[in-house]
Length: 111
Image 1 (cartoon, one colour):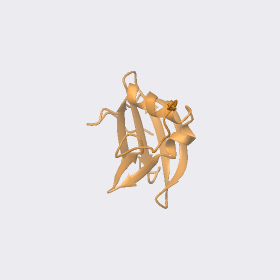
Image 2 (cartoon, one colour):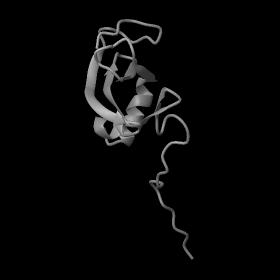
Image 3 (cartoon, rainbow, N blue to C red):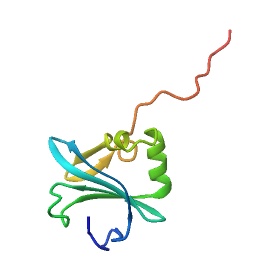
């Protein structure tokens, strides 16, 4: 989508990594995940014919890579963690309490 440079730093010549339609909160959005060398941009377009209207989240590359690795490096799994709250894009694991996950290491008490 041709957004152009704006106050969020979303560049017009960013590299698009993923683009597909997904349903969130009963509404269909065009989800775009793109990047530049330092940032990852997550954009949700409620109407792809009006690219000037979108919800966004800008993540540092390290944060985005951590969230992706938590989702087995699959964009489909990553997008399942998106939700809209108070008109803003939120991501489980980044906003709020995150996932309830089992610890990787389980310590047993020897008797």
